[in-house]
Image (cartoon, rainbow, N blue to C red; front, side, top):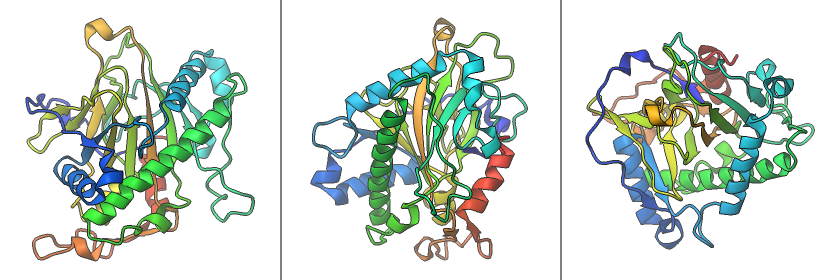
Length: 333
C-alpha cells in the first residue's frame, strides 16, 4: 500500500545502469547464509530485490498452477460490469477488503488519481480474535466461481514466502532467525489484485504515481506489461525488469523506520505504456506484508551507531496507528 512522495520526482531521467541482479530462491534451501547476504545486500543498495526461480519444483517458492489460475480469475472479475463490481465496494472499511474502483487511490503529493482499480483480500481471523475490531471479514464475488478458495490459498502461500524473506532479513541484520515470527503472525497483511486498464486519455494521471509502500515488505508477482521503476540513489529512474518466474520484493516504510533506514524504503512508480501498448491492460498481484497491529515500531538497537544516529528517538508508533495515518493520506480512509 502506498505512502509518501511525490510528483517532485516525475521529471527525473531514466537510468542507464543495469537492472537488479536476481537472487536464486533455491539458495534459501541450499545455503541460507549466502541467500541472506545476497538478499540483504540488494535491499541495502536498492531497497528492492529480485528473486528468481519462483516456480521451481520442491523449492521455497509458489505453485505456478495456482498463480496462473489466480490471474485468470483476476481478469474474469475485472471484466465484470462496473455496477457489478461496485456491489463489493470496500471504501467503508478503508479499502482493506473487497473492491476499490478506478480513480480512487491517489499517491501522496499528487492531485491526479492513479489509473487503476483493485481488489483486496486480507487475513481470515477466528471469532473472538482481538484484531477483528479493525480487520474485518473478507468479501467474495459470487460471479466468479473458485475466487474464494484460490485466493485464500494464494494468500497463505504469499504469507509463507514473505516470512521466509523476513527470516533472511533477520539473519542479515544479525538478529535471531525467528525475530520477526511473532511480530507478523497475525499481521494486517493484504493481497491486492491490480488492474491497470488500457490508457486512453490519461491527462496528468499515471498508472501509479511515485510512492513508497507503507508496510514491512511487499512481494510483487511479475506483470506481463512493463512499467515498474524505482528511484535510484543518483536521482534517476531504474526500470525493474525481472526474468520470467521471478518475484520482486521491496522494503516498506515500517521496516525502513524499524531499521533506521539501513534497509531503505525506495520511491517507485508504474509509468504509462508506450504508444504501441496503450491498448493493453496490465495486471499484477502485490502482497503487502504487515506487522501485527499493536507492534511498536521503534528503532532496532543494532541499527543505531555513531555514524547512524537514531532518526526516530522518542517517536515510537504502533503498526496500526502508522497504517491509519498513511491510509488517510492516500484517500483510502
